[in-house]
Length: 159
Image 1 (tube, helix red, strand yellow):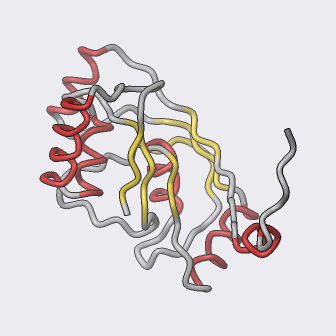
Image 2: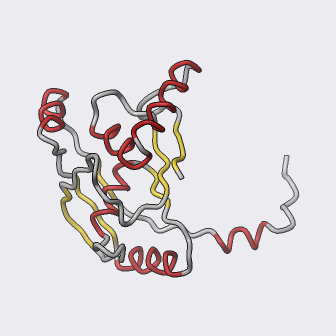
């Protein structure tokens, strides 16, 4: 059944901005992943941040808006494309950016991501972004409430 549009729907849509980036998630064995995490590195992934996407991201940042990454692979793409001052530049190719505690995020202001498996680089990135204690508290809550984990599971928004 069709619903009547909200009175301010057009205004809300005008304020939404989506910049599409491409990130091809890498694939490796669990043994490789565990070794790489121990070595504080992760597999390279191919990313593309177009000129148009970089311009849209810079415009959003300059207007005071937040950059919200959807997923850890997108986070790696955005962080790779930003210079130390947080200015986005077009990039296309592999990234081997490894985010571990102490990493200073320069591109992403908020992160929407799944509940990741223990001992994964994805969980390390998430805990580095959101703060280890806060993310672990969210995980304890997720386990106690029966949330689903991994790719087709529940997600969280870290602001």
